[in-house]
Amino acid sequence: MTMDVAEAGFSYPSLVSAIRQAGVSIAEIGQITGVRDRQVQNWVSGASRPSPESRDRLVDIHYVVTQLLDIYRPEGVEIWLHSRNPELRAGRPIDLLIEGQFDAVLAAVERLKSGAM
Image (cartoon, rainbow, N blue to C red):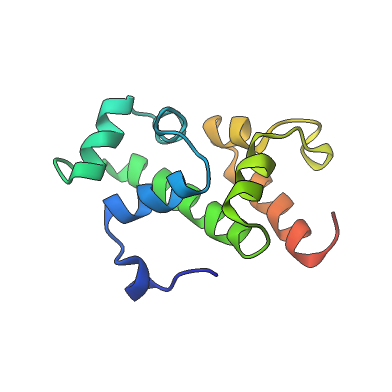
């Protein structure tokens, strides 16, 4: 189910849209990328582009979501991201993403994909 570069179009609006379809709110995207909600809405409308740091975090959350979409439907991704996870010391993946702990979340996703969870 993962989109390739051409299908995704690799535009900021398409990245935000894909993340939103997996149940991540505009506010959560803003928290993960370190900006206010309004800035995320500006990316969606094409009125502005993210800074390099925000861009990197946006691309990272998109990667996490697309990896999870290989396993779950969008509703399942939303539930997984917002549920306490024993692999993450009972932390919620969404909270770890907001804290910038992408590697920990990605490791949990990889274990899930390999059937270790």
